[in-house]
Image (tube, rainbow, N blue to C red; front, side, top):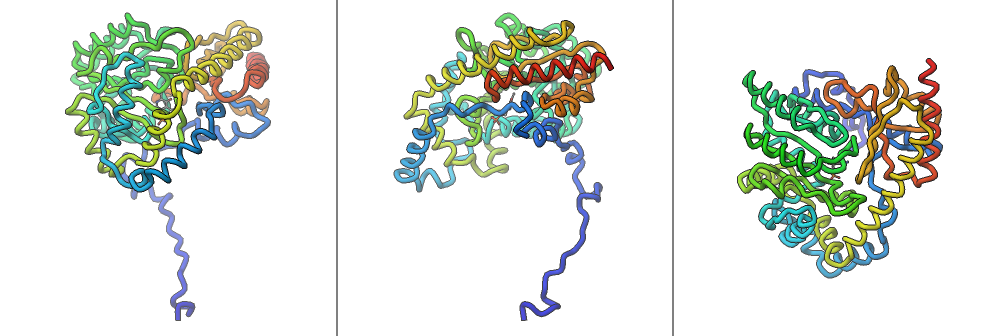
Amino acid sequence: MEDSPEHRPVHRETRFDADVARYAARAKGMVASEIRALFSVANRPEVVSLAGGSPNISGLPLDVVGSLLNELVVDHGTIAMQYCGAQGDPFLREQITDVMSQVGIDASPDDVVVTVGSQQALDLVTKIFCDPGDVVLCEAPSYVGALGVFAAYQCDVVHVEMDDEGLIPEHLENALARLTAVGRRVKFLYTIPSYHNPMGVSLGATRRSQILDICHRYDVLVVEDDPYGLLGFEGEPYRALRADDTARVVYLGSFSKTFAPGFRVGWALAPHAIRDKLVLAQESATLCPPTFSQFAVSTYLANHDWKGQIKSFREMYRERRDAMLESLADLMPATTKWTTPKGGFFVWVTLPEGIDSKAMSPRAVTARVAYVPGTAFYADGYGSQNIRLSYCLPPPDRIREGIRRLAAVVEREMEL
Ligand code: PMP
């Protein structure tokens, strides 16, 4: 009976993808980032990829993590594999306040909302604040994943200029004055103050305080994204913006770079009225953040020297940063400029006049080196003379080889 021709499933040719009118207007803003398109070629073994920004977790003690996870399942499995509250596990939230004290924030577990990576925190913050057409101020350039979220919520991104010391306060003030004069309400400033992605630069104390003053005067919320804050190569970590203004700053943190991204555990610290909305938004998005991942991170923090692990991550990244900066200085044509990161994963390069980084990209891949063209980090098409290089994944000798190949490509470009 089941197999008789009239009961056999029919394959119906419905082309949903071709019918644009079916989709919500917000889906139009959902387009593959240039980084995603690059990954398939950049991951070929013969290519030195200076494109990807995934953390290098090869130094994690997998045996230790493995036995902690085993104990977690055996001893606490029925709780660890159950739903939990939408705000996140209380014990992990308490541990997060300890992490936060490293950047000068005196938080209570009540201020914390656990999220699926800080990426979800970005999504939830934008969801609760932004209607289509609302203005979000971003650094120029800015994190590609944040631009993707802002596009999905149909925000109007206005970029604010940066230099080698981060966001320029005067430009922020000018942008706010200009937008206020034409009656546009800015929903928030999105900023990555420490070890910026993609520029690698950091805001010093004076600029931090100027930026908070300006946002106070214009009554603008600040979304501080700080996934690299503990990955500085010199001295103490920067003091977070939220450490000096808990009423105005929503802080986003993550275990992706200090432990491992696969657990997808991040968090937001927010004033309580905003926190309540975030918890409701979290509830409708996921019911609760993944309990098992939270317990895994929590067990790791409680039983492993996580501060020592971060120190060894920092040393590894510093050695790679040095290899990249030295090779750039030795090999790149004289008119090339680049930033000097004091932490994090990225160097931002300004190519010699007249070179288009996007057009050069396939030629670089042919020469077996990959980078991300600068245009990926702008909502408005700028960045064609820039590239983002990351030093987090390849070992120092591969970095040197990658820069040697890149320098040869740039030199050829200059002759075109
Ligand atoms: N913000 C910035 C600036 C990032 O670079 C990243 C990851 N590349 C994220 C947020 C998201 O990180 P996660 O969701 O893994 O916490």
